[in-house]
Amino acid sequence: MATQEELHQALVDIGRANPEGHQGASTYLKLLDYSVLQQCIHCGMCLPTCPTYDETKLERNSPRGRIALMRKIADGRLEITQAFGQELYFCLGCLTCETVCPAGVRYGEMFEHARADIEQVGVLRNPVRNFVRAITLRWIFTRPQALRIAGRLIWLYQASGLEFIVRKLKLTRLLPARLRALEPLMPRVQRYFSDALIRPIETPPNQKYRVGLLTGCVQDLAFSQVNRDTADVLLANGCEVVTPPAQFCCGSIHAHNGELELAKQMARRNLEGFDLERLDALITNAAGCGSHLKNYAHLLQDDPAFAKRAKQWSKKVRDIHEWLAEIGIRAPTTSLRQTVTYHEACHLCHGQKITRQPRQVLRAIPGLELVELPESTWCCGSAGVYNITQPEMSQKLLQRKMANIGTTGAQIVASANPGCSAQLEAAVRDSTLNVKILHPISLLAQAYRKGDAQG
Image 1 (spheres, rainbow, N blue to C red):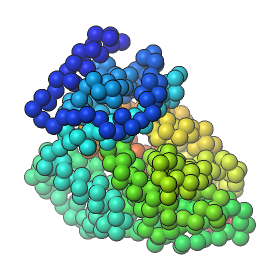
Image 2 (image 1 turned 90 degrees about the vertical axis):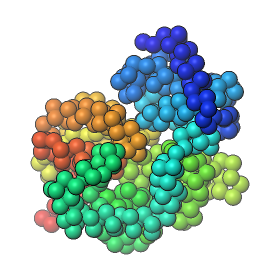
Image 3 (image 1 turned 30 degrees about the vertical axis):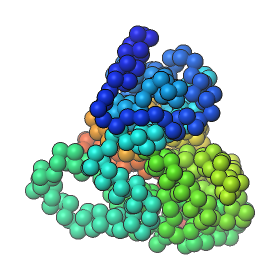
């Protein structure tokens, strides 16, 4: 375990870094209730659960070390420097530390505020990074139609055979090293978006509830069939499904990447898209989105126009597995005789503390054998855009995850987050493992459809 001397040296290094570049004082960390920063009792229980500390064994790469840095910056004893920015972007934001912390440290809140400070001061700015963030975070992920245009271009590249030709001729060698490494990670974009698969309102004959379905952005592009499956499962369980077309991004990608004001804007847009008074619940099937969607009340607590509505929103948001467990899952009448293992998305098990309910969904399917995955809660390395910004560490985590999957003998890996699913699918394409990556709800939907076909 790291010593206090090692932590002290890390603090000295951070403080001296980037003496001639951008550096400055905190705005966002200073806005936090100081008790949030004081929660950490330095016990070290988070150390063995942190993927980056586990890899490097450096105190600064641990939650405890990062909290010490953030506290000193909030106190005004350290400047925000390039080294601090690099450290906070080396963190996965997986929130494993929150699960094991005996003091209830709200690391995720500190993490988002620290990244907001980093972006405001600009210690990591460079022309390429600025351009990429402007195109993605501030344009594509704030405009549903722009996101769909980008998705359609990727689909044409994949479906036309151009992707195959480019890879066959090894033309990717002409790309810069970073883009060359990223190209295989590109998710398979679907031909149809969710609103082409799901009507705005679908009503079952035995309606008991009325719910809104959140279709997401990456989920809508790469896994739109999961949204259709989710709607079918909800209908089979007596829920009328309300699905507004072309929904806005939830804002999690903005909050996690230092754009807290943009995250608030996206939250307000989503709040205006649903008639909360007429819904029993708001359903999400993406772990990362769900964790952020449930945080709208806290995110907008100081907004006089939206605080009350945001509080109502957060009370009604449910992960799909959580909702089914709450209302009682209708058991399928036919079996799926396959072996499945379950990968726990970080923001489902650590962010939302949902671990039992997905397994409950899988065990409700007759014939399905659930084999527990070793280190099921260990991050796969996707972590939003971490596989883009930190490819080396991301790949180490992914290979560890794939090695564990290989020990299960499973035919299917169940994953309830689009980022995890895309990351695992890319790994499967480059491995000898013969497994499919499917959402637990898609398996339940398959069982229902099989029963309907036979009935």
